[in-house]
Length: 145
Image (cartoon, rainbow, N blue to C red):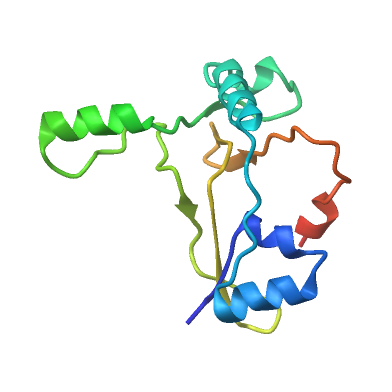
């Protein structure tokens, strides 16, 4: 059975015991998520969603953003079709899952999460944007491979 890793797992990076309890027994420490961050998230998505990548970072390859259908849109589609909701071109479900990968010891794992925005570059590659609204220290080195 492959291991599952999600961005929320990084919450436990400074607490080995918390990480162990989460992975071994499914015990999670849930911090409340202030509403202001949801408001910022929606505002940032609205700002970027209709842009091309070159509009804000000229060094990026050309590409467009995927959208995530809102709960209301999904509900309306379901009413119209009375069947499984169809994901349209350049739309993502709320949660995405990677294919099964292998670590340097050949153990299976996969990544799962709810991205802020996903870019589909014209040359068939993808990029993930993660908005930050805090002044936490830079953790990007932890994501290098």
